[in-house]
View 1 (cartoon, rainbow, N blue to C red):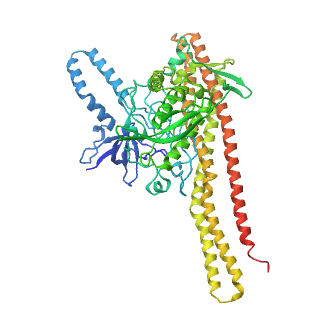
View 2: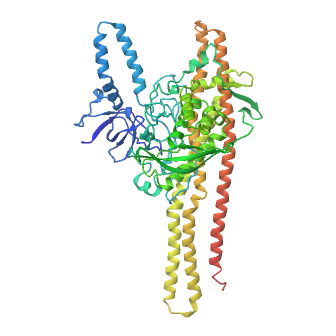
View 3: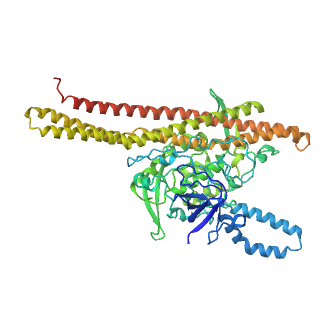
Length: 625
């Protein structure tokens, strides 16, 4: 009998992330109880399938009755099972000791935190250029509602540090890591081993609906990768997930002097990162299929060649995945980190998919190489320049033990600028919030319009041209049956005009791949970038609120006036970092949109000139009488 589950909380699916929208009290059928990363696959009463957070549902008894408050969630049940023996033993030994009971409760809380699945993650695109293999709409899963992630009562408010984040329809930015792209990391095990389940086709949830997946070849992308590609993460493996709270950064008596410094200078347009004297890109090429365990495990390995060294290294997708996770942990509080192209369950070794993924990994690496902080970081450089397996594993361990993660990344930043007052800091933060929200709305609108236009150009519009062409050719056939010998030239001209319209139909159907595709890719990439800002802004607003509350702490002698001044200075450092990142964002935005819209218009001009030339040739067959 199929397992049923009752939905405990509303969950709004993100477009393009394999997710299923469910409402509190709804009964769903579980089709795959553990796809990884704290997600399960379910089917609702309408027959729609998708991913739902494991801790948002509770398993119903086999009789299908709703246990209401007596039920345990999937995550809770697994947790209780794993602790049942140890809890019973601890309770028996602590029966007469309140102190021991308190200690047990504390241990239980810690274990619960380390084992509970993450909150759902929002999607964010990766920079890519993808050749579309069919006439279907590859952005059909992007059709987010106008409200998107921005409609909330206060999507930019401060978040409580350390509080368990819960996603809902009004504000779905909160995640376990406090970031919309919270990554769940590799599974437990030896530090040097990769979880081979990442290469196993476990999930059955397609990215597109059945009718679309056949046409689109199962191409995937998402704003933080589909949950099926995430694996559960123990908090003690990656320090970033037990990240320091905002108070630790703001109230530390003296911040440690880190070896790595991130300078911020004031340029012509305000605060800015210091750009390296020479830039580089990284070429992703030569995908090759490899295997291990006597051929039982297969994977694709890519060759990466930095242009500044011309020395190649090889990486699998899971290595890129690891890099993304580490960048997110280390820099995600200050810098938006775009997610990778999604992991795919089926068709992973098909030529078209491999080509698509390579192009999208190329775009992602280019984006990372263009960032002055990311590209110069020890983490990123080690990923590109390790010389052997030992050096790779040593660098990997070092990165995973890095303590300068989360908000502590701001302790490495040194603005060469005067201190800011709290009002100015707040105004700068609000300005960034307003712009990114407005841009998000504009980008989503263009994505919606572009998607509709893509569907029209690859569906109804070519068919209309084909109908015109066939109708003209049918007319010429009828005329030919008259037996009148003086109309041969006319009939031939009408026939050719009909064929011209059939050719135009083919041009119309293919054109979106040459221009609209790149415009849509660019917009979807920026949609992902913008999706990172609400949590970044939220962290800044949270810090500002803590500074405002510091007056009460000074009044009650809990902190000194000097402590408050340090808090303001450190929030000022955060503000300079935000401004520097926005200036980098704006410079890239101007370049990217100028390039992609110019390309779009050039291709459109060429497209209409081609059509005009074909129509002129058809017209030339009809003499003026």
